[in-house]
Image 1 (cartoon, rainbow, N blue to C red):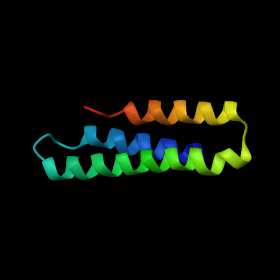
Image 2 (image 1 turned 30 degrees about the vertical axis):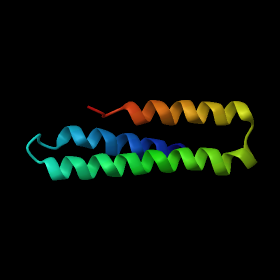
Image 3 (image 1 turned 90 degrees about the vertical axis):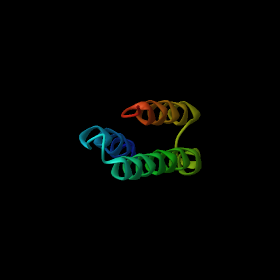
Image 4 (image 1 turned 90 degrees about the horizontal axis):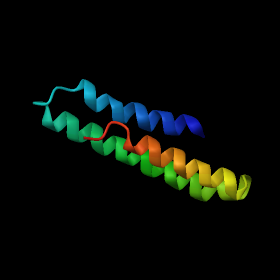
Length: 73
């Protein structure tokens, strides 16, 4: 489950490796990162509710929210 969060963070950080003049590539990576992070929230909300306790779910949302802030401009 945490691998999804790290993939989202890695995609978010990938935007830093793209030159500023490659606007379409930066927008594509940004939208992809948003999609992965949104999927992480859905994963933590829907699946984890049946498997783990409220404390773990709460921490999952904190981790996903923190990772979603990485790589933003």
